[in-house]
Image 1 (cartoon, rainbow, N blue to C red):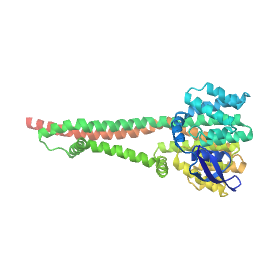
Image 2 (image 1 turned 90 degrees about the vertical axis):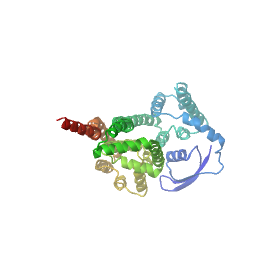
Image 3 (image 1 turned 180 degrees about the vertical axis):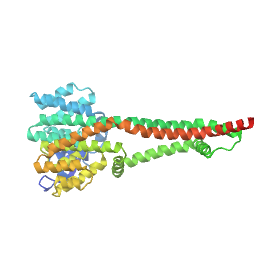
Image 4 (image 1 turned 90 degrees about the horizontal axis):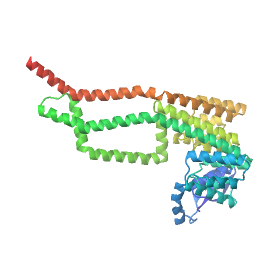
Length: 412
């Protein structure tokens, strides 16, 4: 297991440093967050066990990764077993026996082994960053420190249920327009490669002057037929370059910022991100985590890199001594409703409750917008599809119409 040297600040702002034996830098950050330490620097120690054994274990860890449904079920089962008075070691053993996948059972066995070696449950989970997100580990750590682990697991199960449903609703809403746009693109390719060339051959044999629209369609079709390998390579290269750029921190943040500005869909995605932010931060504040630490953890759950960067600015502002309202106002990433509810919460000491209301409001708003998304997008798609069909019809049939009129004139 590799070792990492860290530097950070604790809850009182004092500088701390030390070493950790964890699998990855992200796992080190999760352990520090669970201890109430904000990391400033995390660096791997040279020659600290990063050999072939570690690399050979990586495929097994990927195979053992829990889905969000499995993590939710894990939370509910562990909550029920602990609530029933079962010791945590026996609870994990029972869950391991009933695991639906061998890799999942192996991961639960590793958790039991870590507990048997004297580690806390949160520290054992931090050794599996693919399975347990930072917020989850930090909340479990709070539950261990306060003696409310079963209640924290219940809250986490509810949070995971909300997060799963919100993401599924957004994906379902965007599936229809994405399918229609893809179908239109395929239809255009088929028409230009197979349909228009046949008409072009007929028109060429007639030796007539063609309208400019027909000439444009035939020219574009000839270009596609003659250069389709280059076009295919260009599309594949462009897609690869786009995916590579999107995987960078700056590219992902810029793309996610653009997505939030897309008409209709951008509003839904923005409100869904705000709902996840409010629900997650409300849960962390209610559990007793400091606001700066809670925001640091929540930044990884909103599902939007642009919003995550803005939340990091909020955390920096709070660490400088600013109030939550002032720090959020300076980012220009939150709606007036969110800022107003935070202001009321800070005045009354009920920020967690106000954020809960914000989450509920935006969840309902997203549901309403998703319900009418199809009716809002369909007119746009119909207009675009109608324009494409009109151009194709005029370009293909105008010469035939002109020939028909000329033939009628000669016969008359």
